Length: 411
Image (tube, rainbow, N blue to C red):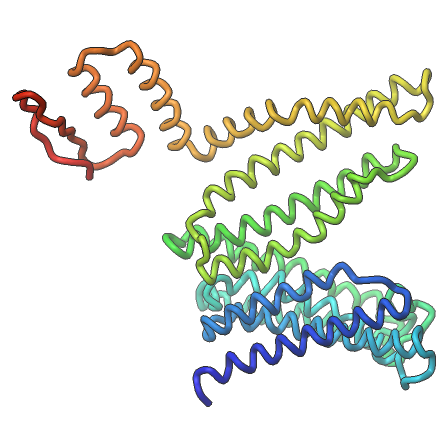
């Protein structure tokens, strides 16, 4: 087998995954079920995985992401089979209930592998150390047990649209123990937490390129988690007080859902090293705008609650409180962003903050200073404070027979 053979197989597999997923969407639209918004998320993993495998075939992360895409394609194919037999042409294909029984636990290998092995092996496809091998086996068992339990649990299918069907693979002798066996699902979040700890420990020991790669993953996952959390909080606090769901809330839900694509995208950037050194700026902006969004969301919730309580005796359930709160939050955007940016720079980017303050002070003194010797001393001090080199000296060009002080350079 030549070196290019695996790459060709990978792209053939990616093409097959794409065709299966698109066929599933076509059948769903024919059945009147609409387009599944998870298609973009499902295809993003195998596409990034194929790019990684093509360039770094020995990196297990690419193969894991490709496997996630293959698992998703198999699930989509089973769903197409069941929908065609039950909704498009009822009775045309045999045993759609078995296909749905296989779909029921399919979220475990897809979501479980994302939260365990993808994190534990990032970024080089290897464990943080040999001591983590037992934990890798634990994660494998934590994913396999609940999959088997859901697959063979007797009773109705857990697929939302087909709960009226019973699980044809269910084993009746397990009925008294189903509730206890389903507790094995708890092992999955335990595996997530342990793998996150492994990633954190890897980050603490990392340096150079590996640390930048881990920062990229943290930026993508952190942004996704922040948006998802904000959407959940707003849905639980604001929506119950409104007569109709506002348009911006639907947009927020869509943004938080599609933000999951950031996870494979940032993994691809980190491993393929595309614009790798921009991560510190991205993290800075992510923290600033994440904190700003959270603060403005909290202010909006409080303003809507307070204004509705004050206006209810006069205007009932008027939308005036919503409009006033929206205007107030819009007015707070610019000053809020400036204050949060200053706080983040001072707290997490102290060197940048101190350098900026030093430059501002030097600019103020430069307007009033005309003597060359104090100005030279100020400039050397400024460079030392801002850049912190090991040695600083200054050259001045000789003009009209005046010899400048000799010196070295910046090191």
